[in-house]
Image 1 (cartoon, each protein chain N blue to C red):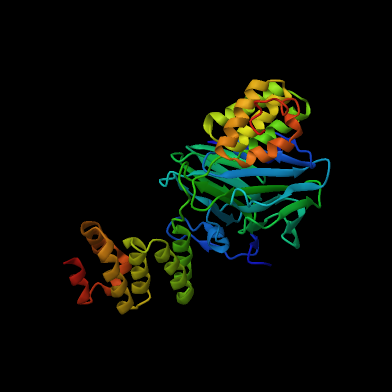
Image 2 (cartoon, helix red, strand yellow):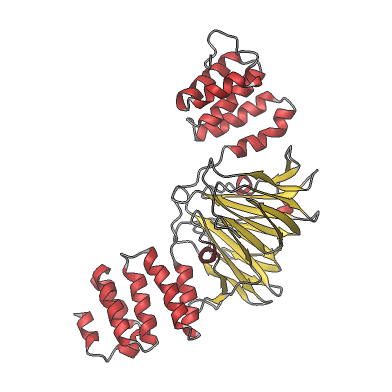
Length: 216
Length: 208
């Protein structure tokens, strides 16, 4: 294969559980392809499993869901309908949508972008991947994924804060405090303080003498 | 919310033998380009082309069946659930169906730019109408597209071609003139274009 194209088999790539939601299994197509023009990711699930997390698009994206294989039940604004392979579902930003798999190895691909705006990768799929890898103890791969988030928004406090949480949970206090210090330089102080005070991810470092300095 | 099965979408059989299934138009999607293709009279399923002019990145996803995809000088057999991401717009691409039930979804856009509906969609819709010489309908389609993008030179040029063939000489000259004002290269095309045969000898032909 040349540098000009990439081939991916959706049945062969690793799926990452979205632990922060319902454990839906993400196929991180954006991350694997480097597609920069449009948002695109996949979801895979067995019969009876959740496929697409329930959400509306606060990003203002309009989305198209494509059932690639298997069969799903979609629910959009409370209305459920059967979606066999080959079904296309168009959802506007405010519509509350979710999908459940009805057959083994059902795969849905989601495509999205905002009308009138260039696509900008929000990096959430890298977070899902990083979190799943961390929970499996694959910290080096997790760090690489979280670094992708940081690189996408180097002046935003959020990815640095997430990196700190991951390091704290892994027992790496020095790294966690280093990330928190960087995050603090970009954060709204009140917003960050709220997270610091209430986030259980940071419990492993909460008794460290450096922690109160962050709240100051 | 709106939903459709790929087999329920309109069928536009193109001259090369592939069938265009206009997903974007069906749902009136404005944020990105997306279409589906199935084989028609020939086994062609994705038209051979590059994206050099539009600068689009594209993903082709096989929704059903098997295809042979050409990427540059390489060929790959792809089946349901496989996709090819064409990062390089200048790379030649195209595909033939290896099974009659094959269906491909194409998604595209230009990195760093908000999506604009590509003019080729108008030409694809107009193609059978041009064949049938239904000029008024072709003109109406172009005017509909130009209402959104009044200074789109290729649309203006094609409108002028249609108007010339329809015998609407004054309109043809007006729109050709505007296309050339926007992009002078259209003058070179116009002097060789048989569509303008009825007006190219006129003293006020804009490309003369």
